[in-house]
Length: 431
Ligand SMILES: NC(=O)c1ccc[n+]([C@@H]2O[C@H](COP(=O)([O-])OP(=O)(O)OC[C@H]3O[C@@H](n4cnc5c(N)ncnc54)[C@H](O)[C@@H]3O)[C@@H](O)[C@H]2O)c1
Image (cartoon, rainbow, N blue to C red; front, side, top):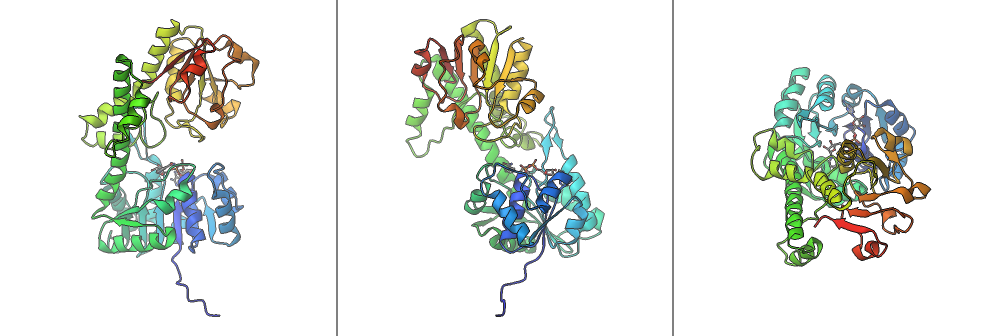
């Protein structure tokens, strides 16, 4: 039988992290031969053995194994090697902000230099990493030109398509969210659109420029940060009026134009608390965007002052934080509010304990806290509990073994106040 299926170009995926490995495995299972590159040799070895180093992403192990068995997915620690074998190059190496909120490009800059060294003429380079608007063309396109001697839009094509997925459901989100795509010129946009149509089989949303596509992803994050800040402000005001904010939000959001988010003890993760600085550092340094960052970062402090109001000093008190991850049911400590809480509690000379079923004891110790299992007898000595990330293990937590506990601070408004107060423990939440 003659095989009439089109011959698809080889793809390089640069950065085989949580997102990059998932993309590589999905592309490879949709007919593309994929060369994944990562500077971490362990990652490379595992992928070449058909294993995913990301263990908590539903469906990913199976996709990586299938792609490996079908000889469609190969990994290397040389970006140049992967790029030189491919006609389509997808970049998903992170950009961070440092402790002063300055943008830290070191990882992606190194990757882009390699791309410039390995790129073949007529290749398409697509950036998926979240970026400040303008960077795809001005910082990276120009660097590829410098390294390769090729002309952007003529000798190689350049597109930007933001990654918008959510941990723990990346494979589903890749199918379900429209893929926003911008190109440096019409040909780049068309090539990138053709690729995603085949490689992801999802809805496409073409926009008029690279910068529009870049802006749209940062704007999504700013929208959520500002909305959470509004919820936090309303929660604090509702407290003054002796009104429960959760009930208010359910009532308000029953009107279809109201989408008030949930207030809480802080905003973490590698998107919402970071990407607003991509605007703030580029001129949006007044108004709602920086103010919202301030409000959301002040919530940990606000929570601790409420705890101090209830139990007097935190000095020498045993405080247990539930959840090291920034949110429930993921293993993800980036910018977690628990890190802020650990620092502030230590400054106040409290004894800081952390429980998180997703982390080992030694991992918790590395973050400067003492691990405490919920089966450990020492829980009877805990003076205060702070709920930071609502893992499913905490849904059925009974507080009866916390014999000396004076206060539960429900930082995510998840528990029932009456069930806690009936044990003689005080309850506080946000709003
Ligand atoms: N994780 C998410 O939920 C999420 C959601 C939306 C968008 N994003 C975007 O995806 C990007 C990547 O996120 P992630 O979760 O996959 O990150 P990650 O930290 O899991 O993985 C990044 C990988 O890049 C590799 N790397 C670093 N420098 C390199 C280099 N010079 N060459 C080759 N490899 C290099 C690292 O070794 C690591 O394996 C984020 O920065 C963000 O822009 C992530």
